[in-house]
Amino acid sequence: MSKVNKHITVALKNTFPKSRIPKKIDNLKIGDLKQWDSLGNFNLLLEIEKILNCRFNTKSFNQIKSVKDIKEFLKKSGN
Amino acid sequence: MKINLSSTSYLVEKNNNWNFLDNLKNISFSNYGEIFYKKYGKQNKSYVDIKLLFLPDILDYYELNSYKSDLEKIYNIISILEKRLKVDTNPTIIGVSDYLYINIIETAQNQKREKKIKYAFFSELYKLSEKYKNLYVLDIDEIFSKYGLEKCFDNRNFYLSRCRVSNFGIEILAKNLRRILDRIQKSNSKVLLIDCDNTLWGGVVSEDGLGKIKIKDDGEGFAFFEFQKAIKKLKEKGVLIALISKNIKEDVIKVFKEHQSMVLKAKDIAYFKINWKEKTSNILELAKDLDLGLDSFVFWDDNPIEREKVRIKLKDVKVIEPDIDISNWSKQLMEYEGFSKFNVTKNDKKRTEQYQQRKKFFSGKTRYKNEKEYLKSIKIKTKAFNLDQGSLNRAVQLSQRTNQFNLRNKKYNHDDLLSLKKTYKCFMVSLKDVYGDHGIVSLVCLKVVRKKFIFIDTLLMSCRVLGRYLEEWILNEVSKIAKKNNIKIIVAEYILTKKNKIAKEFLLNNNFKKVKKNFFKSDTKLLSNIISKNNKSEIFVFNTKNKIRNLDIYE
Image 1 (cartoon, each protein chain N blue to C red):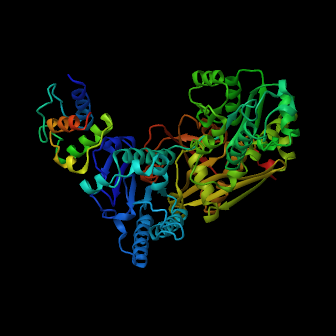
Image 2 (image 1 turned 90 degrees about the horizontal axis):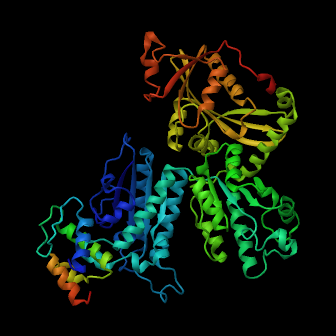
Image 3 (image 1 turned 180 degrees about the vertical axis):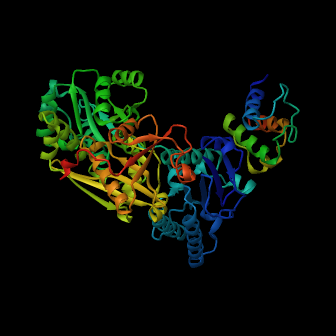
């Protein structure tokens, strides 16, 4: 598992403690986990910011809805 | 205790950082913006109500001429809040922030309108907190400024979800609210155990000599001087200062008596434990002398080995890790919240003096062969008076912190006592003797039950004045009240705790007889309605015909 995936998995576990996080997370998106609704998405992105010490701007924050989106943003911003 | 969190801002419920306040399961979030939506009445369930008010959500920051209408909004909030506080005795914490932006040019000659409103708001809130002791006020900006306002607020979060604060801001809020809750639930530490050499002054007095130790000189000496000032301030707030030092006693006393720059004087020190014994055994002795649990002690020593020894051997003692630079010690001590409490009473200011009197009382007692003769010689004067507004703070304090001589260990707050005194006979006792004025030392609350018996709801006494048989004088006062009401039976309930065995001994030594809980067979509900359901509860009865011992000490 890549370092980024490990970090995202930790963020998913922290944000959705009641959900079982699968080993392969690349295709996960909003709605796939029990608590991953719009509020869950907000909390997940805040948690990722905390873990990866990065910041999503207002525009991207609204657009990111999946692990794929998160990874894309991180790649673009050099994380 | 459940927590209800409401705010003018969205609080991002389920955010992990709220776990720093409490387990998320224990926190309920009101709907966004609904500060006062709940119907308030007499609440049976205990919970803490936390309201976080962000003034930019309430006031119109972009309208220049809205000062009056904004002020009205604030007074309206105060008025609603007061209505709630009148009926709800659960703790309420109000946090307020006025931060939106900082523009130093705009505020160089004029106070910002929002700031004026915030100050007016705080002034009103503090007036309320003086009246309603279950109200606690929190300046959110002050807390955030310690960590950086920019880091704690987040405009992006506001535009996305109407949440004013950042993820980090939520963490800081949660942690600081937890600190207030902890103090509401657990009383403060009472004794500062402090070393001397390289702690109260720079250098080693027995080696460097009186003239060469550093106090007040520029640099290091000045830092020690300020540190002593911080300690003195604590003493004035009621913290007992005990010196625990491996040293030559005469040398240390000489510093206190002769060094011109000493802020602390011998009279500020409640106990001197200056010898070559292990500090841990000195602390244990002190705990026994003061009748205090080890969790009441805070240890400050420059020597890491001494700190480690205390940490390992006396786990309940709080050991402070002093900053590596002594310049920060004064600030570190002032910021240490272990000693802090919400209110300082008149009695707190006299606490060191009172413990010194206690020490004199016991050393006097050992000089007399006949205990009664000794007690008569110290001219004890007692006074019983009804609980009133002026003594309420002290009554609450006694109720909250008396753990040993306390029959039922019921902890009352201001509102509890105010409502209790409407139907119960509540009185307090103050005590004087040749050693000084000991202040108010006891609280008694009695319920007269249908002219059948008197139930002792509360009988507690500060352990500072034990050894004078004051408890028997108090029993006599209770007995007088019973006789006045033509009542022959006094009922006491004893609820066992870890610390209050002494209260049971008092009952047994004074002809209280243990009875079954259905003692009043004809009307069992009379008693069962007022006694505790706790299985550690025992019922004792006392007949007012019984003679009470040791009253001659007080004649």
